Image (cartoon, rainbow, N blue to C red; front, side, top):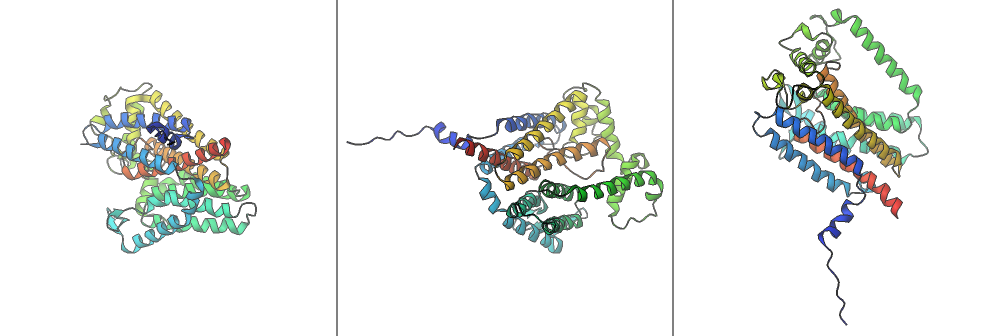
Length: 385
């Protein structure tokens, strides 16, 4: 007698791939993506195909998220050393043979022009999470020193390009892994105290430090100008201080409820520079006001909270450290972007996740979210088995 096997439906074949997705994390991402599309439609209405391209970038990131979410954390861990090695090798190649644009050497041609520093946003936390996972239960001071060395090499090469924004993101992700791996507080507090004292001294002696004949030596001239402009943007209101002043004006003019969708005068009269990229938060604030900003901040807070919960429930040390570091990347992106547009942090060229235009940044976000989903799925699979 012949045995007939019923062919599974399309849904029966897709369901195993979707099972285990963290719905709360996915909901937060969808809300933020919706806000991003709304903001891009308004701020980029006369920027050609910016809105359509932004939507396309989101779909590409969603595809990457879905694919990476199918890779178990153990397989991700096996990619740590190769990705880090390739990333650092490409950074060295950039320093030797890189392409220079607008005074920065950040790109290299390997058949296509790429920016290798973007790879380190993911490779760095992967590498350090792998490093501490291999030393679980027997971490020594020398292990933390090695971790700092692994972090210092790519951060130093990226700062040399120079690219302070990307260096800050890579450093934040690496420091998050080192901190959550158990770095003693006695080693954490001294640099924090020194940093706070330095900030106080810079504010107190700003006129002297920002004098035209003052040479800071350890910083590039453009970096010194950014700090001095932050302290007093009115020193050059039509030049270096223009970005910060116009951003602050737009945010303030939005008031409580904003001027309304497509009604932002600072935005549509083109007073806000980079209104579809780094300064889109100013355009969003003008049109949706404090209420819109609070909704946006709540979305990011929930995303970060959910990421930390995934990290806390992760089944292995590698997964916990990686999830915590990836969540820190989202926090750093959002905090630095909102801070620089609001005039409380220097302008360093960090996009606002899901809101700012940019294909490379969106791909990085898709990778990070895919890894978080993979870790969340691994926990659910263990619970169901």
